[in-house]
Image (cartoon, rainbow, N blue to C red; front, side, top):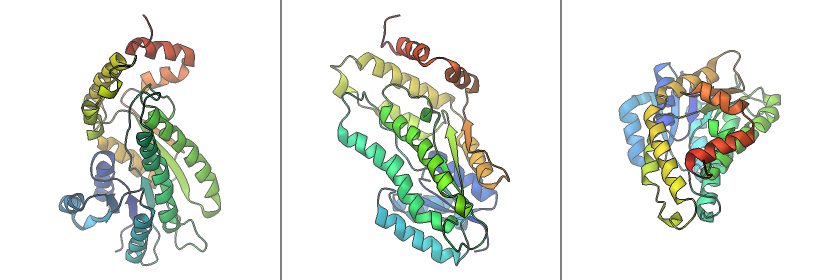
Length: 284
């Protein structure tokens, strides 16, 4: 194998699939992680020998480390050009009533999974001495929800806020190796994750004060999915983060940049009232 290679986690659908598509179209080889053999077969059917599927769950430390050994053997001493930590889930619900098992699962996949994958693959990106070749980069897929949190999305937003701190600490820890760490933070993207909003069972919260607001939020999330950016746009930004000579430390990619800017400028108390009124959490 002579192409430069990257590892991308969570490539079965959505952003991960789009990152794989963009990367392979531009000459990179992708080691892409999926959790099911059927998804691995679908990946090869779509991209041929430009991809090598890795079957693991990011929360399974032993499986991730075994996959890293497989990648190292294929590379034959050459470094990875990058690691893209994309795998993630979105748990929703009012924090006062959310089952703790769901909270733990959200943290385990979106934060602990990133650490597991980073520990396993960062040495192949160049975070070791002596390192062979030019050091690569680590791209963590964050969210605009990592800077501004919506109600009922506390589990997801907590992990994306946490990913910002994780990435900043890691970027500074990897300075001795020359390995850069970059956050790509999408807004709404037209991926299957939004369609799952219609599957959220709010029956457990029917007797709480939050029931009407949850219905409004679900409708809002479904509308975001329809108006979101094509996932290929995120794939292009990730490719830029991996390859440009002087990358930013953070790229925000959203279909509503003006709304995002205004939200960042407004005082938090004002934003609280706007969101509260929109969802019916406070009287208009």
